[in-house]
Image (cartoon, helix red, strand yellow):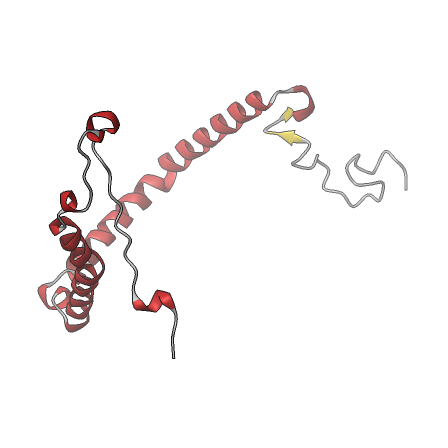
Length: 147
């Protein structure tokens, strides 16, 4: 096969695409002669132009149609019977129980603790400032099983 009929990007076999691979060029610019900043700027401008072309052609129509469809579906699904259903009420009860058991119970116990009776900070509070306290909360399940 003659070299005049084969593409320079065909590898000499004549079955190439006839253009440079995408890694060799970035939006028509030779990557070896440009900086990373120039490449990123070219990518950004190409992306913005592509988006604007898409938005003017059919993107705006797609966005409006999707928004209308979503609002219609939301109106259908947010009825009283669907929102106040047995599974949703079970989840709500579970969330309240978890908050009570994991957060509110410990918070109320720590708040009701009289820290001033534990330690005397007379004289040291002016030197060190207001003391900070840490509550260590552990359950039986953390100690392991004893027989």
